[in-house]
Length: 164
Length: 164
Image 1 (cartoon, each protein chain N blue to C red):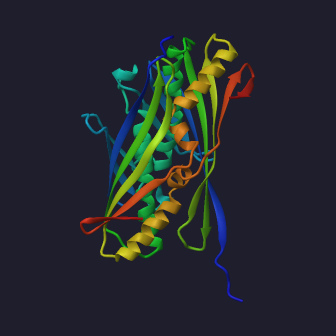
Image 2 (image 1 turned 180 degrees about the horizontal axis):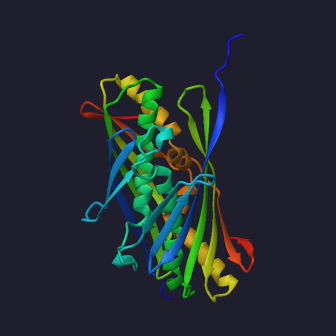
Image 3 (image 1 turned 90 degrees about the horizontal axis):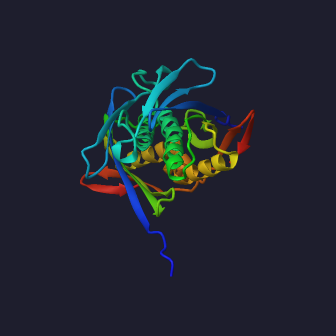
């Protein structure tokens, strides 16, 4: 009987603690529980949205995260699949729609996301397609976007937490 | 006949151009087409994942984006709903799972996302719940995560683009 390749699961856990500062600025500390790694980041909004423009807006972090996630996976799997590449340029398109009635809070929805991927490589088109397919499957954000996620929200009320 | 409040739609479009630099570093320029606003951001991976650790990893940008998006909406809608708040602290929990067989490229999937929201306010619990509910609906990332998105990927092949 042939040995089956070993299967295993791993998990990635991040915690982000955000504090409101000024009008629209948020200061975020991202950490991996159990590790000393932390990243400090800040977001703000421009004048038009009532902010002071001291940092990039949240959606620009999202666009960076998603574009870079795919690029990282392309390079990581290029080694595993033995499909050498010299470099990659990815152009990501991000669109959202807001629906507003009078002065009510608006309702947001996704309006389409796509990537144009330009790989500098001598590999065959077939191999590059295989690499992109693997990168899509390995990119945690791509896979998260592909399914409907149940996101939990709890509000602190006194010493308790209320599901909202 | 009573006047109905005016309804309208607006869209938010972002473009992100990412270039591979070094082993795992990605340099991303995010812009809004038709505007001169641009944001330069960089991501990298640590030693363990074959990077040089010159910048935070892509998923930390995702955690920042999502946490801050919700925080921004809470403050923006606090004004519209006339529910005054002094500040807000949000703790976001992010989990992903990777499934790996031997040395094959792994397959990623979402493992759960949740937020603990602590609002500093004299408003009633009822009003704060109303505010969080509006913020969830207005947060573009929350709404994007709640549905299955069809993400497009095109590979450049010569002068053409091939859907992957």
